[in-house]
Length: 203
Image (cartoon, rainbow, N blue to C red; front, side, top):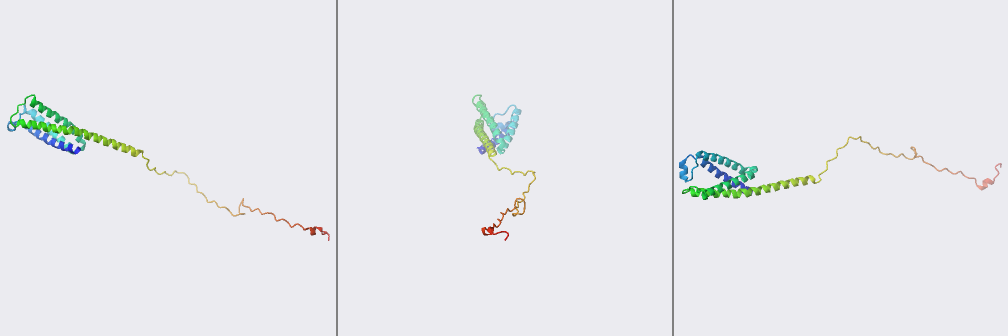
């Protein structure tokens, strides 16, 4: 849709440039007589309108290649073309604009061309604008979702705390340290036998 809109802006710029050049040559009566078109009176007003159309054609040319200007310029140009077509048709139908020969073909053809530009530019600019807004909203939602998703936690920075070295625990062998004494059972003394007890100690 945006490609079609740019193409229409390109051809609209060409038409406005040709009309602007024609109006800039308003003082030349022979040219308007050859084309059988009504000559602007006074010629100064025609030349001022020609300067405006040349400037509009330059703006349309830039909008045809600059994506940021395409939508607003196309919407404005569409309403300008629509108003211009209505004025031409109104003058031809209701105000009895004096036209002779080829003039009866040039002006209706220009009105139809301007009306075609308006019919394409106004709805196309609206659709492109809505589509761009939807894309912006989708991008914003995607950015919000990406922010909400749990990411990789950053590595914890080591704190400046003193390191305690754990010394290995060495258990001494029995008898080589406090609490490791070996308790031995007392050896029982030999008890005298009964035969020995019966003997006289003085013998």
